[in-house]
Image (tube, rainbow, N blue to C red; front, side, top):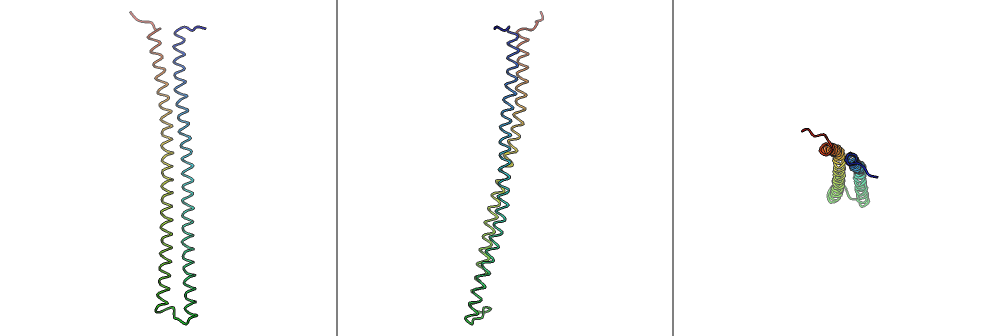
Length: 168
């Protein structure tokens, strides 16, 4: 089967347009998939941050409870020994116990806050990745349409150059 050159020129233009549109759709779809994955990762990081904050608060509370229990045991021991826990060395021991316990609780709070901050930063990064991927998808679609339009213009120009009527 042999086609005339004009038909081949038109067919070439159609193939070029179809290829440009198809390529841009595939590329846009890949970017949309990246955006969706980043959205999911952002949700996971956000949930991890919530859980980390809750766990940190619970650990801080437990640390204070353990410290209070230790201080209570110390008071009972002092009382059993006939010592006044409100003065002298027993008071110093209890003060140290409370102070160290509070430092431990505050360290837990700080570590938890740092972990939450890191997870929230990850969430922000994933949200930014999703946004960038969606912009890239939009750009890919636009580029495909421009490329398709260029194929049409090129095909029309080529057709006119080869087969159009020329004015004397």
